[in-house]
Length: 250
Image (cartoon, rainbow, N blue to C red; front, side, top):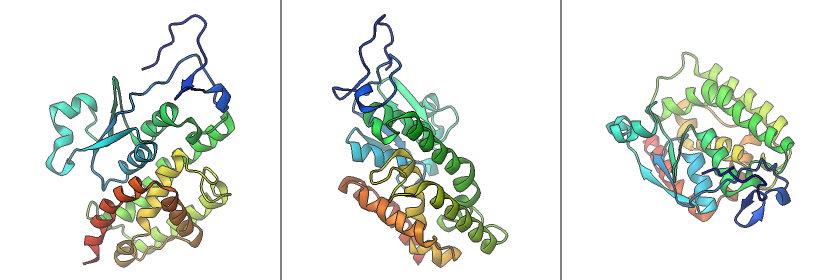
């Protein structure tokens, strides 16, 4: 929870280290997590994967299966947590959140501030990438490629045009945000968890087999670099999503 009751607040701290010393703006509020974050969702979900990979890399929680195929997200218990009936849902002590971007921002502030950005310029760049993913890449492009292949949506009227638009958008993204290996340079930031996991999914051979879509070369390399930067625990977690798409090769 956040505690701003002190008149002369101590420096914000994370794992004993002052936020100000890390170059992170300090408002007088002290982010504090339990270290036992729970994510409710399904491992194959592209919205669940980003916060779960962050949690595994930073060793601060775990996932509890919430099977939306059987309606668990609409149960009274889960609707009490997220009245919009969607996944993921995050619970960290008395903090409850939904929407993967909001969850990622919270997790970074509590468990790894550098993954958001060490100053306002870096944080703003991270926000730009996250919002671009939400408003453009995932909703206009990814959704028309991954979801039909996965069996969760109808194919677009013109798959070739859809694929071309996705490639063009990702090429612009790469020029803007991938000056280094990753959005975060050589280390993962929370926008990498969001976008890197999505393009990693699009690298699966079932995507090309069933939609003819193929990531542009720079994005394909980014997907590989993203995966290589993950912890062994996160890479093991991705075996589930990979196995799910493996079934679409048959």
